[in-house]
Image 1 (cartoon, helix red, strand yellow):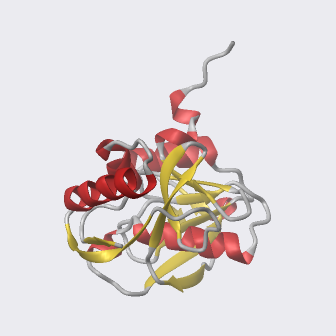
Image 2 (image 1 turned 60 degrees about the vertical axis):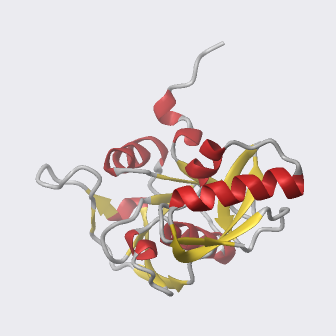
Image 3 (image 1 turned 180 degrees about the vertical axis):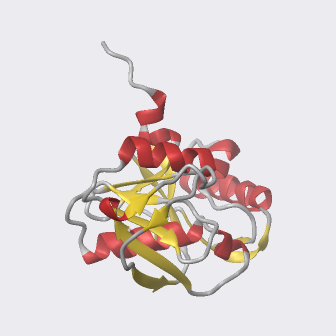
Amino acid sequence: MKKQNPAKDYRNYRWFFTSNKILVVGGKSDNQNEAVIRNFLKLNYTLMHTSLPGSPFMIIQSHNPTKKDLEETAIFTACFSHQWKLGEKKIEIDIFKGTDIYKTKSMKVGTFGVKAKKKTMKVKPELALIIQKGKLRAVPVTTKEKILAIIKQGKLTKEQVADKITKKIKDKFHFPISKQEVMQAIPSDKLSVK
C-alpha cells in the first residue's frame, strides 16, 4: 500500500467539511499557506483570505461551491485570523479563484498577490465544536451535527478555553477527548465558550 505524502494529507492543516460535505483546507502558518496553495489548489477552486493581512488561505475543494459553502468558509477563515484576536465583530473576507493569484520572488513566504478584482463578504466570527471524520473540529455554527460547545470572541486564553471544553465534553457527553485535541481545533486566544 502506497503511503500518503504528509504534505498532501489535509488533516495536517486547518480543515473542515461544509454542510454540503465539501472539504475546505487552509494553512496554520506562512509555510503551510505555501504548502496549501501548492498541494490543494486547482485553477477553478475558490480561495478566501481576510481583506486585511493575517489569515490563512482557505481553499474550497470544489469547482462550484454553493452560497452556503462560501459563507461557511468565510466564517472559518475569519475565526482563524488576526482580526479575531483584535475582537472585530464583523470581518471582511476576500473571495477569488485559483487563476487569480500569483507569486513573485520578492514576496514573503505565505504571501500571494491577487490580479483580479475580488469579491468580498462580511461575516460574524463564531464556531461550533463538533466531531467530523472522527476528529474534533471547530466549524461554522450553521452545522447540522451535534454541537459540543460554541466558541466566540472573548477574554480567555486558548489554554483556559481548552480546559473548560475538555471538562465539559468529558462530563456532559462522556466523550474521551484530550486537551491537545481541543487546542488543535480552536482559534488562538481571546475566546469565550458556552
